[in-house]
Image (cartoon, rainbow, N blue to C red; front, side, top):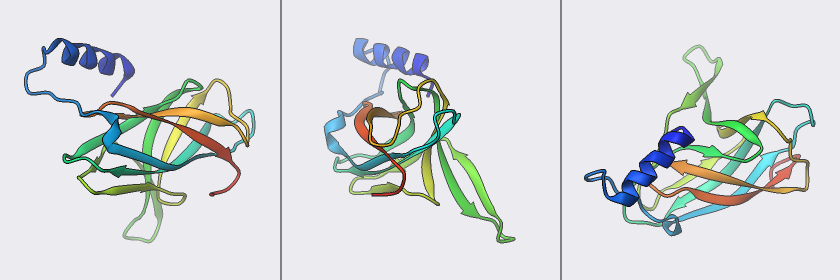
Amino acid sequence: MPRTLRVLRDALLGAGLLAGATSAPADDLTLDNAWLRAVPPVAPAMAGYFDLYNRGDRSVRLDGAEARFAGAAELREFSTGADGQRLERGLQEVRLDPGDRLRFRPGRRFLQLTRLTDVPRAGQRVEVCLTFSNHDDLCGEFEVRHSAP
């Protein structure tokens, strides 16, 4: 969901104007193993990986992310087509039911950060906020690394 729509939604939720719409607090989600793959300083994009665990009692829908150094973020996934060719596609949202653990790993699912304004370097820790359509945002530190931890 674009930031302007999310801000409007949050304002309406706060004012109680969206009937039946609810938002859960971020403390029922756990973000672990968060990291970004280091890229050259002129790179237009970088990939992020993490584990997300839903400890709450209701489903949540992850729909994107935000970072101060990226103009856009998208959830992406690799799969294998019927012909054996590797395919990449965008994900509108990913659902996590209570007790589910979602893993974003190299070669499978990833967070793609694009339109980078300031490329973080290996060794830095930067804040990335995961955004949800029915939940408060969840922000955490992502370590910039050359390879998986």
